[in-house]
Image (cartoon, rainbow, N blue to C red):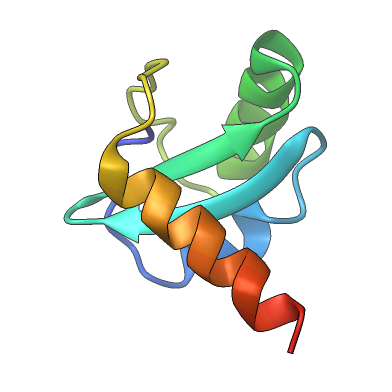
Length: 79
């Protein structure tokens, strides 16, 4: 979970290495990653490149809403 509410951030967060998906939930982003440590470093670098203060980040267990968004996204890709 990335505590950052700027809506345009998804575009550049998705370009970070090891980030598989990013979705906004309230005032933070949930990022699905394939390597937590490497993705954290990549995300921190992206914030610095954008001239933004690196926000707090933490590893969280996926919620039902996270799973729904993931499955809904997969279903729309298959159409």
